[in-house]
Image 1 (tube, one colour):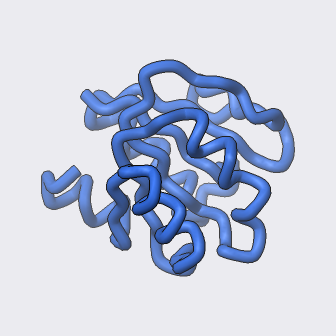
Image 2 (spheres, rainbow, N blue to C red):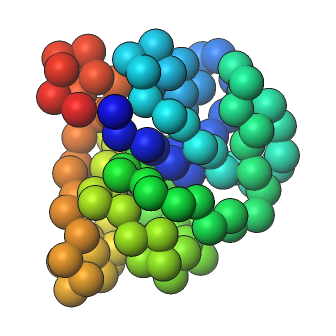
Length: 119
C-alpha cells in the first residue's frame, strides 16, 4: 500500500480532502495529514507543522496554488515518489520544480483514481 500525505486536510465531511482521507484508509493506505490547524480525523492526527514523515509514496494536494509556495521545499525534502494535483490545485510552477527534481506528478482526482483502481 502507498503511504500518503494529504496537504490541506479537512474535518468537514463535505470536503473532498475529508472524503479522500476516508477512502484512502478504506483501501488500506496509511494516511498522514497536514492542515492549517491541528485536529483528529478518523484516527489520523492532522499536524499543523511540517512534520518529516518517512517513507512517503504520495503527496496529494487539497490546497490551492496560491497557498502552495510555502510547501515547495517541504515536499522536496519528503522525497515522495509522486504528487497528485487534485482539481483546483493545478500549479505550473510546482510542476516545473517537481520535474527538475525527478518527482512524478499527476493532475487528477484522487477520489476517481481510488474508485477506479488507478491509485
